[in-house]
Image (cartoon, rainbow, N blue to C red; front, side):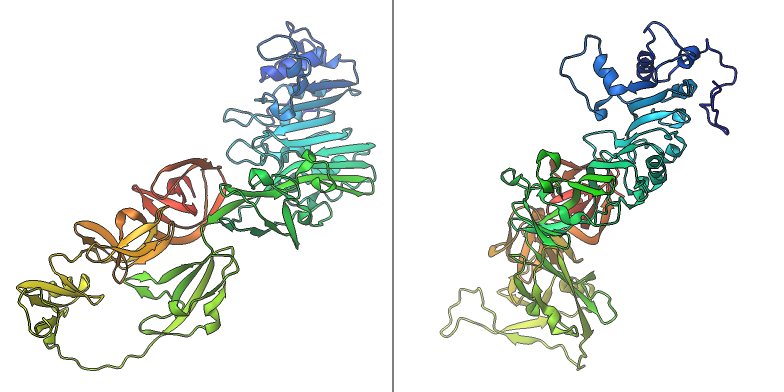
Length: 625
């Protein structure tokens, strides 16, 4: 038989000078051993071209699962009752050598099943399969995971499937469900699949296992009039769109569309979620709201992803999977959808204060923002008391000040114009006031003495420093210097907090309630909730310790939080990425490589820049793009 040699630079073209005695070598020894067994050649003999040409049976079956079960690794006999899935095969590192099966007699067809390796040294070139007369072909491996070597689906167009009845392209791992075809690969290989379905054979099976397909419409045209089954029962759609959730409250979400062969949306057929507490792990634990919207109760607060869809053959109920027929064509599908789940302690509304040109209004050089925590999703809020900005007049409609808390963080932009100021000339004069004296001298009246008070004006370096510290005036009482500070209190100058940094910013508290102190370092009744953001006007020292000033006379210890920079967007992991809390402690969990996550900002944690991707979950900036 004359070989069908491909032209160009194909390195697997069979040389023209081969003879029946030419030895055929396989680059992968396991594949070579399986082919030798299929050809009924003793283990001690080589495979020759003559052995292939002289094969007399109508079918040559090379099934790697069957071979490995019949020839257990390490020797020994087959184990009764043992089983092996295609995904559990030992991966084939190279198909080189398979090209010689073109030399089989014309009447012989090949059944071939193997899982292709995806490691760094693997050669997953499919061209050794060109020209082989397949009756069944199963290729398992990595088609869509960019972290490993991917099978080039464009090479499938050169396969000889003119007499085939079974064609399977499946992902290569039961633990990596996205390794099969995705939408892009399906669209590229669809012409080959449609051509296979129309090859004139009486029935056809198309299996797309461990895939990640949300649009099956490229397969329109497989309805050939002959029997055709399209089976994708282990389909996982990874949607990077985050779903926000509030701890202890129901989660409502909208599923992305899932299109069948004719473009009909199947995303309205979901009934099951695995992101629940163990007591709720059952079919029909989703409430269908219509229009692909669902509500989930009893969600697992430790779940990192919202996973939902069809429970599949673990539950033999009509809604556990999709079974559609159109003429002689069957479409069978089980799909699960996975989206990042971002947990929040409360529903929130964030106010952005902007001027008439849309630019942020600055306070101490930083954009003015404020986040208000709610209680329950759907509760009303009123921002009227939070809308006052000294020197500005609100121009946004007052209707924008009220609304309801939603599951996703809500952002309200309030617009302002500068309030015209009336100018007047002022002369700084000593002001006589009546501060309480610390003297032990008794008075027959009130015990108060007149004291000369001097306003601080920023006309000298020393006065500028006092202004930076928040000092408005000075006085002497019994020979001791006192400051009048911004919150209307006289403070002994030797006790008053010194400004470490006059720069304002945002501090985010750690995962615990944080106490506050006043300017004297004394605890106050107000406390800050865990994992909340607070704008500070400056950093000061009180009795030798550093504090963020978060209100008029309220200071947060620096060790109770981390400075936070707001920058909303999406980051994508470059590798499997460990999760940390805001104090830099490992959470013992990680995010998968190549996944996208919403972030609302970053912080420097123990000297490392980290992005926040959940309530108190952070990932190093060096691990994302």
